[in-house]
Amino acid sequence: MNVVSQLVSAVLRTVLKLGLLAAALVFVASLLIVALISIVFVLLKALVTGRKPEFVTSFQRFNQARQQFRRGGAAASASAGDVMDVQAREVPNEAPLPLDASHDKP
Image (cartoon, rainbow, N blue to C red; front, side):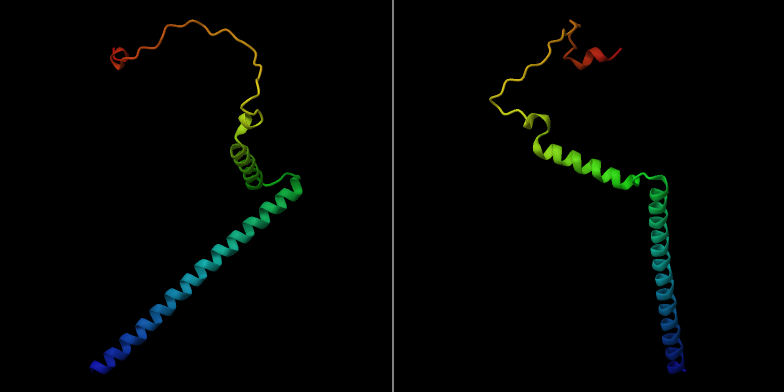
């Protein structure tokens, strides 16, 4: 009796493992199919409308900003010895902010 129960247990474990493996494969295949359909849809929409997909323009803007920060931004165009003229503007004479946090409480 023990041998029969072990055999049935082994067969059931094998069937369960194969069933879970098949379910995982179906899940992964469905994700890949959905991803491919989405990419095809986005590319066809870009072809029809004549506009680049949003993710392409987002990455382009990100790369431009990254390169600008890597170069040092606007400060990199002027070396340390150059004098830059700026237009003067009047700063309003407002009351100074309190240094104490106790003034914030009513």
